[in-house]
Each structure stands twice: as C-alpha cells, then as structure tokens.
Image (tube, rainbow, N blue to C red; front, side, top):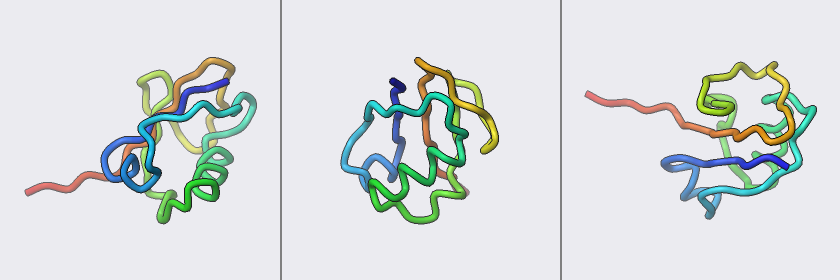
Length: 77
C-alpha cells in the first residue's frame, strides 16, 4: 500500500488529508487518473507530484511503500 497526501485546495476538494491506495507498479499519470476519477478532482494534470518528498514526473513508477504527495500550483504576488 501507498500513502497518498493531498495539499491545499486538493485536501478540501477530496475531503481528506490522506488515503491509503494500492499504487505499486503504476505510473504517477496512472495514479493521477485514478485519484481524479475517485474524488472528482478537476484539472489534476496541472498538479505537481512528489514521491518520498522528491518531485516526480508523470512517467515515474511508484514502488510499494512510497508516499505520494499531490501539490497544486501556487501563485503569489
């Protein structure tokens, strides 16, 4: 199993701070699609992803026990 963390407005939209998900062997893109469908999250393709606190690309493969964090884009002024 893998722990999936949601930050900022994603946490509010998903209604949870984290979930356990069987993501081992899936790519980040695969997991984004599954999470987007399960929680009804929009524009999930613009979300940054970190695996074990290191930024990851959509084609990176998730390993058993990895912690995946989804971080929305941030703007400021």
